[in-house]
Image (cartoon, rainbow, N blue to C red; front, side):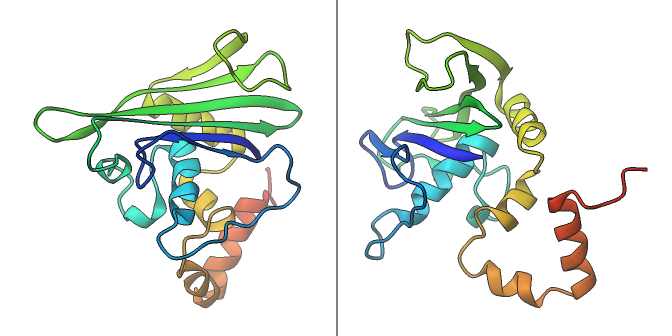
Length: 184
């Protein structure tokens, strides 16, 4: 999976619409002072795909995704995988009671593998609804949320924990992530 474009509005510390364009990069590093939003960019990418973020320590927590002063937030990730281009998007809403929920979620494959999922572009809907999108992403990437967080977006401080995990458990996880287990 290669990110192409990440768009956020009302997500975490990004109250205003913000885009991170990965198209002209081969490799990238997120650098900046503490509080600049580096971790929130990774959170938004993970949230678009899985509807959760590892540093929240609870897969059902979504209230932390919405900026405190907004009623609506969106995250949209355009990504490439296996020669195709996909768009994963989720919208959050704050109810008058203050509770936050995922209002819409969708996963689509773009007909044009060079497109960015604009309103005029044709897409093939793959999943609709929060749970269905998460399941479809897991199948598409071949990684459930926990494995994605271990091998793609390992949260700050968790690398040491992974290294110090019991060798057998670490090996089991790596065998599963890399698809090296027996298929019989």
